Structures are given as C-alpha cells and as structure tokens.
Length: 254
Image 1 (cartoon, rainbow, N blue to C red):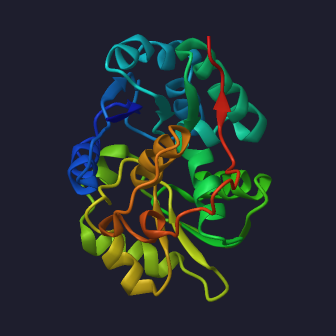
Image 2 (tube, rainbow, N blue to C red):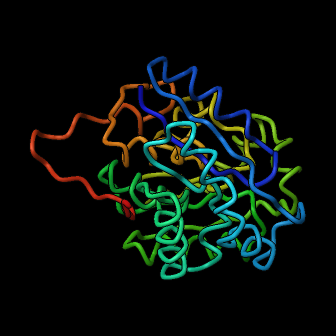
C-alpha cells in the first residue's frame, strides 16, 4: 500500500482524486484534507491567503494518521502565487511540519515536464491572464521554456469546477502552440482526470493537468512508479534505468 496525502483548498474538483485512485487500479490511496479558502475568486492575494503556513499545517496531522508517505499541496495557484523562492519556502515548511517528503502542484508541473523529457510548454490556463502569466513565470524559473500563455478568464473556482469537456478542449486547443512539446492546464479546480487521453489525442501531444500531476508528484516522492495510461502520457512513461537518480522535492524527516 502506498498512501499519498493531499491538501486541497475548498471544494471544487476534489472528486477528481477518488476517480484517480480508482483509475490507478492498484494498492494506492490518495486521502485528501480540505484546507480553508476565504473566497471563491482567484486573485494573488486570495491565493496567498489560501497557501498560508497555518492553513496548510491544519491538515498535516490528519494525513499523517491516514498513513501518508508523502504530502502534496494540491493547489497550483496557492503555490506559484508565492514565486519560485517563496514556493520552496512553503513546501519546506510543510515538510518540516509533516516530517514527510512534501511538494506542491506547481513544482509537480516542473518535475512532470522533465519526466516527459520536454523543455517547451504551452500554458492553457483557465485563470485570468495575469495569473496565467505568473504561472508561466514560475515554470520559466524552473528552466522550462513557455512558448505561449493563454488565460481563460475564469475568476471563480466554482466556474472552473463547472467546466465541461468541451470547455477543456477549447482551453487546450486555444492555448496550444506549434513549438510546444507539452500543453499544461494548471487549475486544480478543473475536472480533468477522466479526460487527459482525449485531450492528448486532440492536440497530438502530452497534456498535463493539475490534479493528475499532484497525484503523480506524491507517488514520485514515495518512490512509487505505476503504469496507468488512462491518466495520460505522464503515467505511461518508461521505467527509469536501474540506479538512475530522479529529481525529488523537498524532503524533511523528523
């Protein structure tokens, strides 16, 4: 049994995670703790408030009791809003509080792009343009070239949670760029778990989505590799050569 603990702000697309657990069809559990979110709208100030240390710490003990082997802050906006250095400080604080390897959805995207052997991405965000640009800057701080950035203008998490497959397709196609090797949809409020292969077929390249990469990141930190192509190319990559070192997130153990 491998258990990945997830911290998730509010309640938007949290039902993606039990769906992913079923799709993995293995001895993997992804228990989730809901952290507080003061408001539905996504602004830099609101995202930073959602990612405050005391809010993340609130769910740590519950997830430890659930047997979590790694911990992921499953909020892309609530991590990239702090910038690259601030994002590192955020997950270092979380790792110290949990005594577990920890990361966030924003860093998960960086690691997932590297896992795919890619270096150029297109950001197809549901966020307003200013937040989409902030996320693109975060990826660039991680050494990833962003060939195009497009914001979908959805200010509220509830609006993103209500998005159907057609809107996801519109986001992916509109945000794609010929030079991009991967298309990235960074919003954890979007229901994407059931649609990644279809989106990949539509754009003809790997697609990374926030809830997908959050679970993958937790498994990576727990040193667990699994083949699950129904969750997209990220879960269908080759096994690493024996003895090969993989990049890890922040790890602090008591």
